Length: 173
Image (cartoon, rainbow, N blue to C red; front, side, top):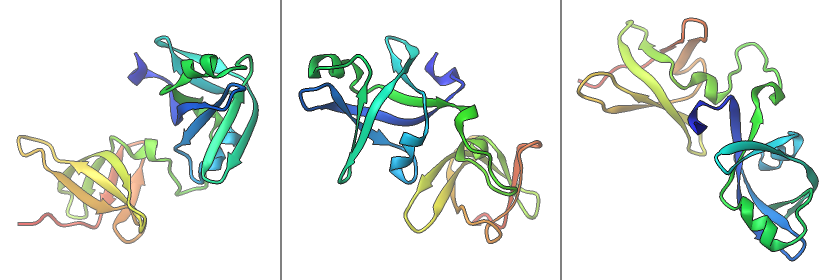
């Protein structure tokens, strides 16, 4: 099943480009051209992850395009439209102490400094000014709490072993 994959989705195929089988890429990396630093790529095609070999890549203005080995015409390139692009966890660079990948924060229990459980990190949203943690509260309430992902201001401690995050945040009464 796709959700149980050991890969990290880093982009998606947008469509065919030109007559020689190039494909358009939507990158989820920051900056977006970093997607080209990862090889090999895996694509989710025909209900399974398949490795593809990239012959060449280009950035044309805001558009990213790639040439996949063995794909030489737009008809064959269209097979990949809307396929997710993934890499293996091992392909990610190691982080410095105190740095985390978003995927590592999803699912952490969030406690405020008074040890009140606020819920779990369900996702992280990019807003431009700073990223925002979306905390899904437990119980029947099931409301979301939005907390800016600002280390040492709101996020005080992250413990990946204990799967917890301590934040400076008070619930509204």
